[in-house]
Length: 235
Image (cartoon, rainbow, N blue to C red; front, side, top):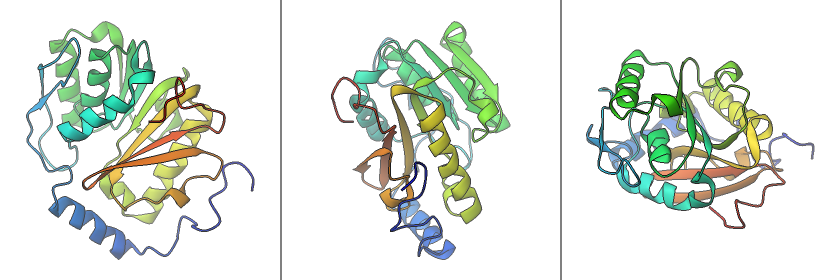
């Protein structure tokens, strides 16, 4: 099978209907997926306990604290000195957490006006301007990613983009491009989605893909075929 081709047992159109995917999303939200307080705090590191502004509404939802904590526990081999690309950054909670724990620089990409304002306020309030790049643009566009390979990529797309087939294809195509062309050789991309909304067979067969499930949340860790999972540890 050529690099980048979908796994043979599950083409992107697969057997899931849009209705089924909407049902999965509604069920996930009903079980508490990403339904949480707008009070967001940095969990650990130099900025531990500092509060972050988060935009109101349903378009941008920060990750649950317990999921974020588990995520960063798995990213320890990559964090120190890392360059991080935070896509669909929202309040910036993931990128700011990375900086608090030792990352060197973060490029935030966000398009929603309310989220951009919160992100700017958070960066200013925490005096992080020298360590970040703020990009207002489409997180799925190559031009928004910059030219520098990232050690860590956070892809936390709005869940509505996984419901509509064309948007879903765009998200997964961007993920594939990020891993192949914009990730450092030993880097890792973390894709956050509702549990059971994405299947391993939807990723290209030559990528290294692992899933961790936390309740109704799934974190997919994706690396290039030659990666050794960061200092020999699996995420």
